[in-house]
Image (cartoon, rainbow, N blue to C red; front, side):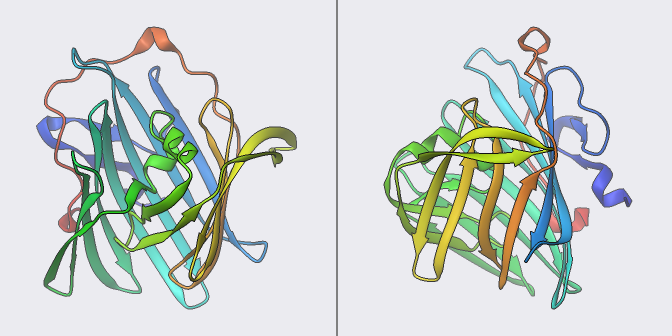
Length: 248
């Protein structure tokens, strides 16, 4: 694993390691990414729980590596969710070309999304977006999948949006590390096909299936995280900022 996968620096000097074992107050998730049953990469996610007077904040750090026929991608990002909303930033290198994404949930609903690529900046408002792919790893946010109907999902690596109709979650099971795990399966039907998200009762995403950059990408959690230790929540001042293109 190279230096890109080891750390991302947030504002105010807060640095979170992504590759090491989870500290108290953290959850560390590793997903195997596959296409047609063949592994093509990994996604590592660390969630740090931060106590603030206004409510708990979740700091999310993510590193994605894909090496598949027709696509090589490395993406590094950070996200923040609070009782009042969520935001993210990411820097991606795709087939040698760099881009960055910044996105933020708006108070009136929807998301503001900014993509910088090839020296050009595109700003847009996505009224139907409710979540980002970072939120799918956040147990405080993934519950928004329970709101069936028109639904948009921002892809953190590209700023693209999956837009369609989300169905009510249905009970099913998924095998994780040889263990059968009960989940709710949510299906988002779009004009280009469907995406599936399988979530445990405590809000852990264990499997996802969606088309990303032309790949039918399946993400499978390698092992269930240990139960969260609520007695070790960190207090950190001055959260903000995020990953920028120069961090690659």
